[in-house]
Image (cartoon, rainbow, N blue to C red):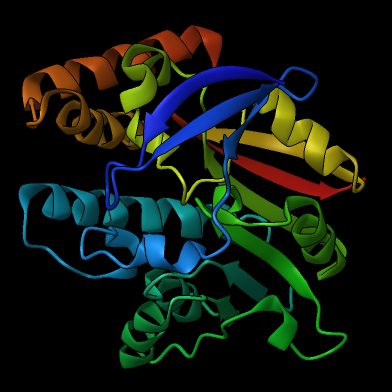
Length: 276
C-alpha cells in the first residue's frame, strides 16, 4: 500500500493520520487506528450524537437531515414485505427509527454511544449498544447503515455478521462518503468526510462492491446523496481556511454534483445490496 495523503483530526485533537491506498480494492485505510476510539467521539461538535441546533451549520444539518429522513423511509419502504423488520446500525439519536416505527416497521437499533442512546430513549426508542446483544437467531428484512460502515473496526467480521442477520431475501442499505468525488479531490487533506480517526475506511464504488460481493451480496441500486456535497464543502472550508465561506462551499458542492451527473462520483452514495 502507498501513502495517499496525510490529514488531521480537525474535530477534536489535531492529531495527524495517514491514509494508505489499497490499489486492489481502491480503498483508503486510516493509519494508525487508535485502540480507544471512544475518546475521539467525546465532542459537542460531533453532531450525529447530539440534537444541537446552536450554530448555522447545526441548523443546516438538521434541515437536510429532515429531508434525508423522508428519502430514507421512502427507500426502505420500497423493499418492505409483510414482516417489516428493520435493524439500524449506528442509530445515533434515533430519528430514523422514530420515522420507521411511524411507518409500521418493527424497529431495532444499535448505537454504542451512551449519550446518543439516552437521547433516543427520550423519543421512545430503546437502542442496544452492540450487535452481540441481539437475541440469537433474530433476522431482519432490512438492515441500514447510514454513514456508519466507515466507523466500524474489524470491517470484514462486522460485514459477515450483518449479512448473517438478514432474512433469505433481505436488503442491506449502506451510505458512505466517496473519496473519488470532486469535492474530495478539491479539498484533499481538508476534506471533512475523511474525518480521521473516526472514519477508519474510505470507500470508492469499486471497493464497496468488492467487499460486499465476498459475502454473496449483489448491488441492485446506487443512489446519490446530493446535499452531502454542500454540507461537507462547508465544513471543509472551515478546516482549510479557518472560516466558513458559504459562497465558495456552495459553488464547490454544485460543481461536485454537476460533474457527478456524468461520472456518477457523488460526494456520498447509498448502496442497496440483496443476496444473490
